[in-house]
Image (spheres, rainbow over the protein chains, first blue to last red):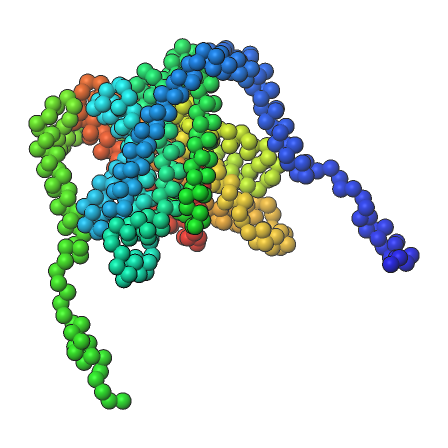
Length: 275
Length: 275
């Protein structure tokens, strides 16, 4: 349908065909990229002028990264840290879930244990690191203990509140059909609490990573934390940033992995709540 | 209408019957018994183990009084708390201001977000040695570490709070020609407050951790230094005093924030905590 003259005039007056004037907010991706590039360039220029004892610059850090990677130092220490991390976190998961199930299901266990759990949960766990070192020495076992106490209470508290929110109707129906306590736990309570447990695990992974770094920094013998202390004491700032960046990537990768696991293990409930 | 009244029915069914005494109705009794057993066992076994490694409740109480009377505990706590207050205050002010800017301006968000995300991904303890290189071993480094630990939760929560302000409210204010200052203080700030308070609650716990970490590593003044010092000279009872004080401090700070949260931001109950 062709437009008549007046309509064409009106359309021309509205000037709909006119291109929008350039606005920065239409190109946010470009702004983001420019911001990152500008920061890296400024760091490089500024960092080269500052005393290398205090600040390094990106190209020096990249060089140090490949140097440490070629020497095998980074891989060896990372492997040591990760083994400790896995053992400590595994123990925290087993005990945390077991105690959480017990406290959530049996009121006697709840009342007997809850004051300790709340007290420990409010105490900053870093404050316990010197005690762990005193009891377990400077080796692997004290680091495992630190990872364990860093992760335990988050898993425990989340499991506990997960079990508490299990619908009483489900449990009653299970009972009415003659399910044993073991079946109740395995088929009703655990699956219903799983989203909560996984939310706790996700938080615990982050905390445990911080725990192991702190413990290793404090003992300063082996592991990524020890590397941080060694390079900062030697004022080798470029090498110092290598474990920092590595640990950040590790943290991001771990939390992404747990999130993926969470989606696979507990897809039936999306609105999990983290405590 | 005649017939048995409700009272009579209740009487007939025997619903008035006294409930039998049950242990489960006395949670505090169970808690007290559990605590008593725990303390007795601790006292019993603690006295039999090497005092270098372990201690017992009466020794901890004794150490508490002696530290209190000598004024050492109060003095070191004052030092710690002033560093905590300075660092937390700075992170509160900067976090809220930058968060509001990021939440309200898409351009600012695009410029700052990549850097914020990258910095937030770094485990903050790993940067402590760097701050020690830059700021020395005194009061400054403690403030810096506390700031670093507390800043990001406040910033991220404030930004998401400011972003989630209902657009129609802002538009109504604009339609009534409210100046930008009024829109900020009368609409955006109150709407973002529950988010900010949720960030503050997370940040206060992390600030305490930051304070302890900084003092453990610098080991000169403050509660963390006491912990480190008494650990090194095997005064286990005094170490436990510091740990208990830190635990109480943690409980107090978290309770205080929760109280403040309820008072300040009572208009929104479903605040969401990020990070």
